[in-house]
Image 1 (spheres, one colour):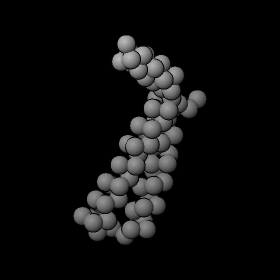
Image 2 (cartoon, rainbow, N blue to C red):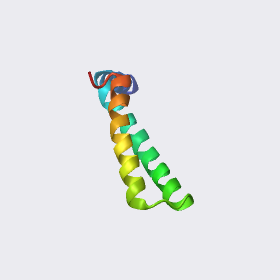
Image 3 (cartoon, rainbow, N blue to C red):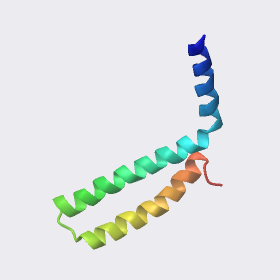
Length: 75
């Protein structure tokens, strides 16, 4: 009995907060890609950190907007 109520509660809250999950996943993807690309260009290719961070973070700032539009979070 209690298990059924918990499933119903979870299902209702997931359906209710779909936009939060979209926002969270876009944020996670952008954060991971920022770390990976920054490390790759700085540590592996030897680029200057301030140039790489400016380009990567600026680029992902713009990309994040388009990702929000794509998932339907931003109108």
